[in-house]
Image (cartoon, rainbow, N blue to C red; front, side, top):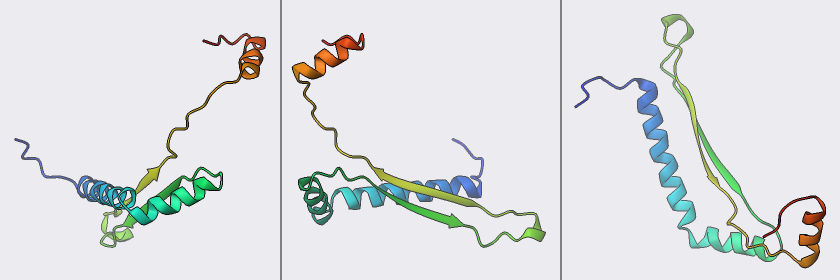
Length: 102
């Protein structure tokens, strides 16, 4: 068992990581968000979005030796993988560049 007290930055990191997980679950589980993403995809775009939260400690002031804490956490949702098929012309082009096509 670890009896060492956590630092303020470790505590804040844990809190922000928890917030990130909660936001990610809320966003990815939202039918409205998924419907909006589908509408964007239907128009030929591939959406990707980032949510970022920044926190700065208000308790530290320049004269008291405590610089405070600044930390941020981001939630990133990358586009879903896309299936790609190569045409015979694609393969011919890659072979012309000495790239093996299997």
